[in-house]
Length: 218
Image (cartoon, rainbow, N blue to C red; front, side, top):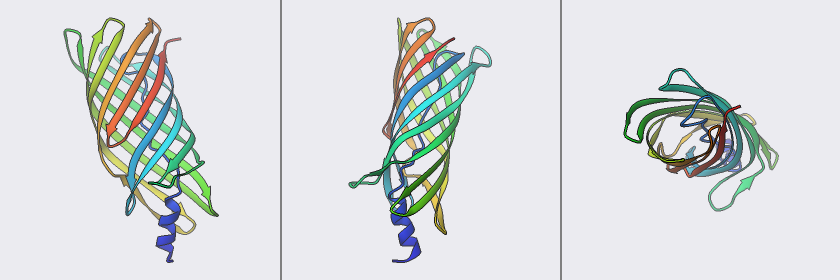
């Protein structure tokens, strides 16, 4: 077995995630805390699925009534990778920044432009292999949000405009990229109180990711 084959086999054990995480989508300023359940397809020479659970925390500030920016941190609790046989037990962190701009409003509807930039760093050891990985992604999307009393529902498309990462295994390194760059984004938000929103965010197609979050004002 040559070094390239050995390295690719080791990467098949790596539990990392480029998790989708976002701060408040409808109100600012807001703090956000949540749990993200991630399932995303990536590729080196072949495709593989990445699953993980990440605790996320962030803050979004209003620049003006239409434009808001935010940022935060995600900590991976557990992760798995592979197709068929799953391998797990990884650790690492994710830094992210996001932004949204309201481009149009009509009746009870809003049209939003969104963007998320994330950077991941993870380390993992399995079967005598020490693996370090970094991954940076930029997502750009558009959403339509409809308000119904205390509820808001939204949907739209999201494109992974940039996806680039690398891994190091012993003396071998290589590139990691997204397998599918188009996401369908769906979600719902409940205004529990004027200061607290409960939110569920779902991504489909290029990944199957669920974010369960609470946005609150102090």
